[in-house]
Length: 512
View 1 (cartoon, one colour):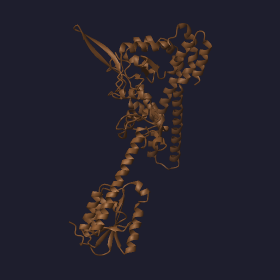
View 2 (cartoon, rainbow, N blue to C red):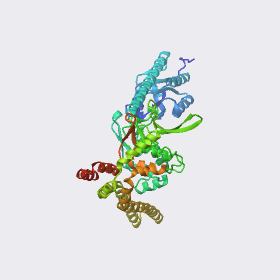
View 3 (cartoon, rainbow, N blue to C red):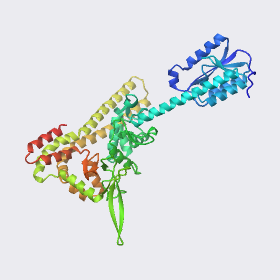
């Protein structure tokens, strides 16, 4: 029970200030503003300020170290009769905590004055007003928190990422209009996904990225390769970890992202097929047209007259869909799709004359990489030159010079190595054309006769983003094709009485 007659005498006081968030500090609740309010009150009513306590960004819910220091100070210095605060909720917005502190101060005979309104805890009525003020402050804080959480949840569910974007991304817009786009570093991360799909290890990818000027740790690379954000998806606590399409520029398609996860699940980080059932080459390559869910596979046993038979199926696992198709039907119709690219011998010669333009188009990415590597090489040469100038003018000593030159030369060697690989790949393109045409002209037979690894390589080559299965028509619908096979399809359809039209289409396609 508090004795409200027990009050310390005198006009000595201390000042307490606190802000719990930067928002409060930026919106009229700064420490300096609170201090000025308390000092004006002290001057007006003749109080002598003995010391100052508090600090910014103290927790709004717990008293923290600084308020404990103040409590120990006033308990030790009996001449302190008053604590000045701008408002009662500067102690804590958790009303029970602040009320407990006010009671403890009042039990010592110290009154607390909210200088902004002139309220104090000297009397029972004043203490009641103080506690009512604290309860209202807590309600206001909880109400604003609920609105904040609700607003954020709606933003995330609408696909807007309203937090700081991950590495490689920048953002523009506000609230639900937020759009995340790949910055210069993010554009280089696209190569990381492509190299992973091509079978490179993480350490090899780090070296290749370093050659392009992007130096990251293995932990950052792993985080990038395993985050669905880079596939344009949001999975967050505000969506209850449900995957939603984000307003995000993807660095990789979602289908390719899933393939990368399959690769990353292996201990070596290399793409291996040994653990997969050779009976189901289309697993995760075929996508349900109704809900964009990749098909999985299973085998069903049926017993008849003592004989056990196994039947293979592909299915969509999406709740409410669960489309089931026999593996035999999907394989036969897939071969039929590949048959569209068949070219008879009498047209191969005419077709090959059109391929060089398409290969030049396909090599644009390699040209882009070569441009980046040349730019990086120029930057390193410039850095080496600057180090030599600084050494010649005495700015740096021998040890620093040797270390810097060695580091830059190592980087230069790495860039030159990647540049040589890039140039070699470009020079090999035209040499590979006859072999590629001969193989692609009967791609259906090749797919039928090869092993699981070969089948999947062909699938990813022809349909890099996968292929849709439309259960309404019981057949495939393509998403997008490799430009080479797109051209083959156009050429085979238009060849014969429409040679000129086919040539025009092919030339137009190559020029895109």
